[in-house]
Amino acid sequence: MADTRSDLINQLAASMGAGDYAKTRFEESRYDAETGTLYCDGYVISKSVIDEAIQHFKLMQSKCDMNDPASRHMALIYKTALEGIKKLREADKKE
Image (cartoon, rainbow, N blue to C red; front, side, top):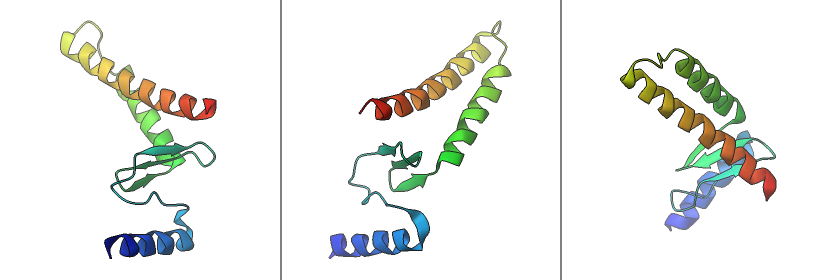
């Protein structure tokens, strides 16, 4: 019953314009290069949200003082997030 219910919810969401939904929490995360959408843990993360995240991490990284160890550490965390998004997009283009 759970599979039928989740399929019905996903079909309803897709018919209302949400696009192709990732099945549910049991499906691996995936990136759709065609739409720029990330499907992750039951969330649909649009290209515009991903672009906002990139801009946010770039802004936060630029505010870090590289002379301060704690601030430099945060800059590396932001850089890691940016590189992760970049690699996600590149990996899907290669496939």
